Length: 585
Picture 1 (cartoon, rainbow, N blue to C red):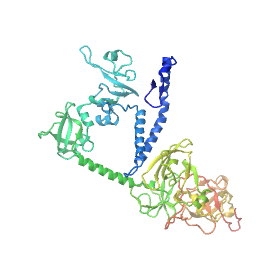
Picture 2 (tube, rainbow, N blue to C red):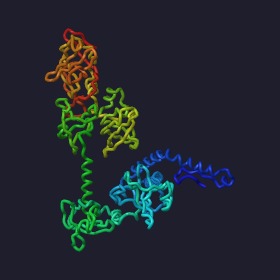
Picture 3 (cartoon, rainbow, N blue to C red):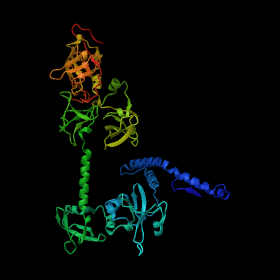
Picture 4 (cartoon, helix red, strand yellow):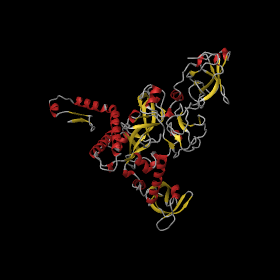
């Protein structure tokens, strides 16, 4: 004897010998059954994970070419397992005939056009409804000379068989149907559908379509249609006689013009014989989808890409894509070393760009001290190349992907990062999530993803660094090249030291021709005035030009700093001795 459910693993077997020997009591059997059933909710998440895993594997198996498939048997087993798990989780009995099942879900919504009970012709015998988060079954009593027909609801778990009319009226478990709040229709038996609704359920999607009456003007004169009779029960076959701004005029097979509301009911209409039009619309839709798949927003460009054409509201041909601290792509003008400042929003398009350049192993080691970089998931940058499974649980093992965009879902170690990525070898974008604190290995990083200070350390390796707070009045007049935070990557200026500044503090001032002065408190190193922030000073040798990024021939590319960058002062300064002044270490 087996007690439990039809779900594998939620069963217990009791031998006849134990029963005959009175080793098992009736109460004991009932307790074992209750324990089996009570544990089902806790096991549902594990089953759902297993089902998702099977779905993912099934899609991978289906993704092969049309050639001979050497894993056909495995695919068949996976499909069988998928069907079984799906049936178990959704409570479906695979032995039942599908024709006997009530209409529900998307199919019911397509047939009736609404899930509100009042828009579905009211309650009918056998309907399953949801009201105030409670599911119930509808029963309608027989009308008699003594009492009119009444509508009740009952719990199908408590009453596996429909209660009698007497039980409906007397049982406390059965309630008269209330229309407030509005019940939602969950399922309805096929034989309770109207003739028009059954016709809608049998529509051929390749040649027919269900539309509202006002949409008939989209179809040519002579197109056959089926509408509801004025009673709302029968069907009326007609053709479009002429089109108008509010729909179309219909006529029957004899050419008699039909009157709305008298001959037929306005509303949903079945349009027939439009296979060619549907095929053309599908083809047009597929072509539009294919064009959209090739289109990119400039904000989706990978840092390091070079624009091959002008893009309105973004940048010009020759500009290099760089990533701001907010991880949004921007266009950098290599002539000025300044980020383009556009107020509009660029439209997606089929834009041409040159591929990005990547850091070499030597450059990675010079910047980070290692050739293989490991960072937290929330420290990944657009353009980084990683293995798919490291940013998406359902990613393909061993597949190298490039991060297109990154979005923090919240700001904590327990929060998750949402990534959009695409395969390095080409393909459609995919999305995945990973915990922010997860450690991820960066396989490659583009030069355009570097921060300004990283570029400076990489391309000005011979410069000594010292604290800006070590400046003294003797350094006044020193010519410097510095990195501010207003989008200009390398600005030449002159150091001035003003004593008795704000709040009697000494203030470092860097003045640049044609630019705002930059002020910083010499004692604390913090900026006290000016749109720019002193990030790094370089004065060794001749004045520096914007630094070229190697790997992109013909493009003079400089590091970028976003104007919204954090106001920290990196205090990396290299100042030669001013005339008569001491050298700073």
